[in-house]
Amino acid sequence: MKRRTILQLGVLVLLGMGVLFSLMTFDQAGRRDPELLEVSVIIREADNTGWSAARQGMEQAAADLGAELRFLTLSEPDSVEEQRSLLAREVEGGADAVVLVPADAQALGPDVARAAAGAAVVTMESDLAASGAKACITVDNAALGTALAKQILRDIPQGSGVLLVDLTPGNTGVGLRLDEAARVLEEGGCPVYRRTPAPGQTLAELLNEALPAQNPGAVAAFEPTALELTARALQNVENAPPLYGMGATSTIASYLERGGISLIAAQNEFAAGYLALQAAVGAARGEALTNIAPMEFSLIRRQEMYEVENEKLLFPVTR
Image 1 (tube, helix red, strand yellow):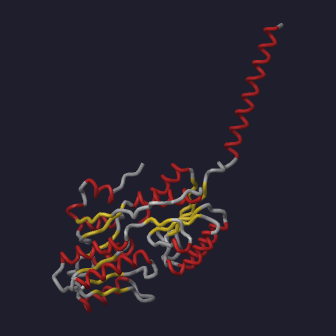
Image 2 (cartoon, one colour; image 1 turned 90 degrees about the vertical axis):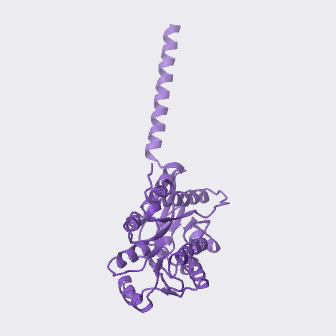
């Protein structure tokens, strides 16, 4: 009798444990982990191809840190109005954090301030800390502009002009690269022609107009999309001047290998994406973001692109 009672108690314990396990399993399957944060990423392009490595970095960070990632592109590139609308929508929709690549930092300042009241905001390229953004993940923009300008001065005949292509006049980060490059070039005796396409004018049309008029010794573009588009336009120009710029997309690597681009400044795009997501998650969880150093960059010419460290930047292998 005693033995039977002990067996019955054992069966009841096992049944109870089974029920408890089932409840725990159902709870995990039926509800979102309350610690899993929602992070929206709003870039400034309509095509996310150039952001593939950065996006992979963000996805890896999201998996490592417990976040759900929502990656958003625009219907029109560099549309301030669309970024403004998306920023408000994502915060109102419950996003815990937003990573923003602002098309126009000054115009979006008030919108970032409003968004920062409801979510952690981290920017890339342009710093909006004054508007409440928690961090900015970017290279040292002034140093990058200076470094590229010094390389151009070494390469081209003294006194030759340089055409600076500016497709994002509202982007303060890219603007700082251009400002510093122009300063260094002018101090080195180079006339500088800073050009932005007029409304309705294509970049190819701008170059067809500017190249014969200014006859520059070099052309430079300071962000990936502008560099890709400039390289594409110059490949149809006879005796085109050498092209310099910033970016490390697969398209840019292809132009560098074929000689369509003379030199690039490249950052680790995967790492930039990872750090941006990491900062956004940390800020959303109330962590103090300190000592976020600017991203490092490397200057790469065609003959150097297959060196080990440069290969990692141009042809990243992600896990």
